[in-house]
Length: 290
Ligand code: ZN
Ligand code: MN
Ligand code: MN
Image (tube, rainbow, N blue to C red; front, side):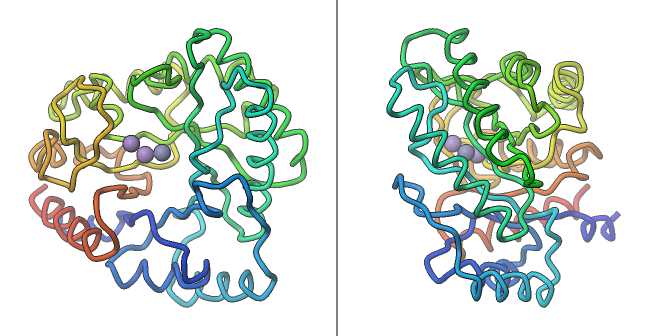
């Protein structure tokens, strides 16, 4: 079964400090063939489109380092909250999301991952309404762009929306552009929400839920993160692969599912490139045991 591991698309969240064009090379350096990046400084409201020169070099390096655009995605900034009841925050979120989509499109990246939002005490129904309204506004403004927004499942922490696929389905269903919405499954966040992927039954249940609610074809990426806390803890503290409560055997079980293997895997584990290279190594070791 070892040969199968070469079909896996695997990588990490990569730094953009040295420019987008450096990301494909660094991805290969850590042993990856897939990656995630922020389209701008994730802690700021401001963002600008990349220079033409950077775009040309980025695309050239995607080719040079043999990275499939289908295995690359952007992750939305931390300040964005489409469920915010504060009008100013909501409006700024819509504007920044629009810019992020334009950055993705400029780079040729087709997927933008985002956390659905936090309702800040106003309730899930109200939050979902605001998310749908915001997404539809963004889709209208970027009608001609081939970029999909992936709603990431989150930990059930505070007033976060999107910790199960019933909630994610409600957003997709209510959207006027559901064809431009998909999902990323985060293993740490899911574990926080009680999805126990350590057993075959647990993974089956998760896959069935995704399929029943939104259709498995909507699942575009996996965020592979171990969890520092036990099942259902809702802490959102990522751990290196195999060193947390999902553990090596848990991931071995999860990775054995064909539905999981056909989607690119992105690490958001502690540390930087060096630590992520170690995570990738551990994942390949686990895959060899399957
Ligand atoms: Zn995320
Ligand atoms: Mn994640
Ligand atoms: Mn997290």
